Image (cartoon, rainbow, N blue to C red; front, side, top):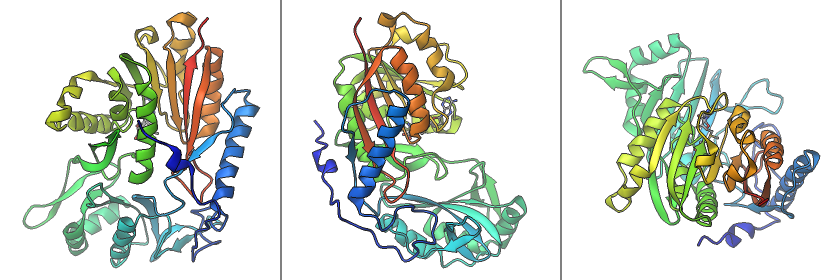
Length: 388
Ligand SMILES: C[S@@+](CC[C@H](N)C(=O)[O-])C[C@H]1O[C@@H](n2cnc3c(N)ncnc32)[C@H](O)[C@@H]1O
């Protein structure tokens, strides 16, 4: 059984030095002792829940994978030769050579990436380091600049020597045909990793895909999901926002079956590939997941009474219409438990009001601090339906 205690005990006095404070807009609380940051997040979330009249277990707990060096993906911008994040005043990009947010492997990748001389004024990049240390970059430029990049050849050639390259909103892959670069369809590779207790599970996706930001912090998240789902035996789960299956796998360790509801086709292709590529010891899990594609904030035709539990990890806008069919059921027909994970506590609080009206009460809640030094945090809540 995972032990969360080690994630609760962190050095409260730690401050993280940064040569760009206070000019960089990336971290709002750099320089503030880490314990105070954790307490501020507790206060913030408690305030939100209290204002919405949502009952919650007190005191809220923070689980931390560390105060710095967590991120394995980084989104940043190019502006007139500067490569970095927006300044605090949001007017221009601050050139950043080192960042305390980055994992050591990502920092090394950034340092190498910065050696490239870009012939463009503006652009956006995502750098990523996969679970095996492999490097990826997603380049988003104006169409005319993408053409220049393909025609120029030497930058792309050098980038492909050191990383996997994706280009544009459609995540195309530049392929050398012998005399020119052509853009081909997106490819799925193992850029992220989920966990079933201490067994890692490879997740196929693109550099540009949504993933949680940190391999290390994601282990904490997967452990919580694993632990919570395991408490309920032999259940059928419905999952909102499965994405590439990051929470699907730890939940599968305790659930008989999972209906993975997701809007994004490429993510679901990744999940399907991950299921197909499971090692022999886990291949029996494949048939326990059903993939279901649609816009489930608008409409869900599934009957919640056919499920024992719900696992939801929605986008910032929250669950919206997904909860409508739940409200229309008799209380005893509603699933026994509801796990809600969110990086946007305002919409979570709104949905929790609806869930409370449906008879759910929060049994446990954690803040997983996967965005230390910033205003942001992840919330995980386990709700149980009260028996009539
Ligand atoms: C915060 S991400 C979570 C992904 C995944 N659980 C993870 O941990 O990586 C939210 C997911 O909800 C999906 N999503 C957004 N809007 C949706 C909708 N209207 N219906 C279904 N899924 C949606 C997104 O594509 C994304 O995969």
